[in-house]
Image 1 (cartoon, rainbow, N blue to C red):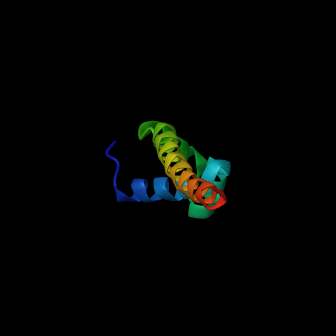
Image 2 (image 1 turned 45 degrees about the vertical axis):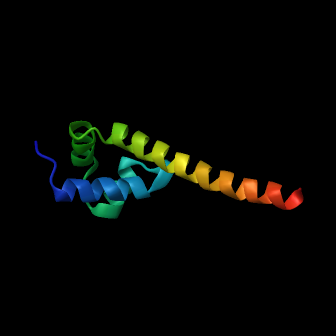
Length: 77
């Protein structure tokens, strides 16, 4: 199966649900049944992609927090 824009759009919706994301919640948000969503999850390796995107977002957040931390340290010294 070829991943089309609809699949990618649903994946992005799933991603934006954050750490509490579930196929049931995605189904409720999109109107697509969980069986179909489960198939897409496996077919398009959504769990691996979610992990990579979450990791990337966390790294960026940590980088931004480090900048704030360093600015605070500079102000104290």
